[in-house]
Amino acid sequence: MLEKQFNPNFVYNGIVHFYMDKKNYSKKKANEIAQAIVQREIQRRVCKNELCKHFSYDHIRNNEICLIVDCKCREFTK
Image (tube, rainbow, N blue to C red; front, side, top):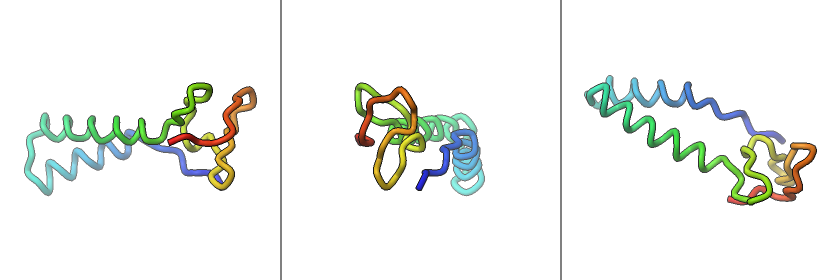
């Protein structure tokens, strides 16, 4: 089973609108929060194996094997 590809723009826009509309934050503050959250989510989805560094959606979820042909990664390292 493959993981759905991460869309940072969709997440970023949703976070900004949430903080501006629901929490009444300024646009600048909402952008800062959204940037921090998106950066954290991107890092969370990158394989920590030094030989790999591909995203989690490039790995088969059940076996955690990397789908990139020339990659020697055998499991997604968190």
